[in-house]
Length: 252
Image (cartoon, rainbow, N blue to C red):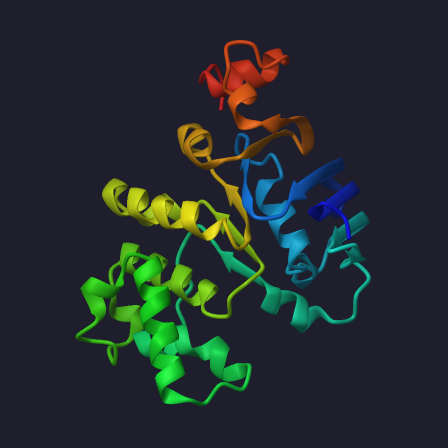
């Protein structure tokens, strides 16, 4: 088996005539945090949607190239449901199910066939703790998740993404609706989670990438400008002037 959890080769994505990603090739190792940075419309979210194949919900989207997960090309796999069970996805804004807090988190395990109440209780508590939400909601788990504040709903989305023990966790601007203190708490959790899963972190906050990323990829206008060790990418001499200018805030 390859040393890489995800191996993306020559990936090109278009929305009609608009090219969102062009000849992207990156390798994402197992058990770590892979940060993706870049200005708006650089293709960061499109890349995540390719990995879990939600891009195919967009009628005019077309994909060329290969995405290997554990050496299997998922762009051609027919086991799409199983693929998405292996990948947790958290979008920039919360997408809560019209269910109780408890049932939001228990939904995926139940769909997988788990019926044991004690086991479900343990999963719900564990995931809510990991999302830094347990202490705020433990006495009102029967309340509708949509009644929570925006930041709390975002953390509930994170808890739900963790509920089926994903091998890969994709986070797309997860902290956009969360206060800085809670963001730091979740960042601490991510550092622990990376020991047992591959985390892909898309962020416009370059310092967040610097804090968390073991490796960092810089996308600009749909192309990979540079990818490598985070320490190098944020150094005074990353080896690429465009990378230096972006992380220094010259543009963005």
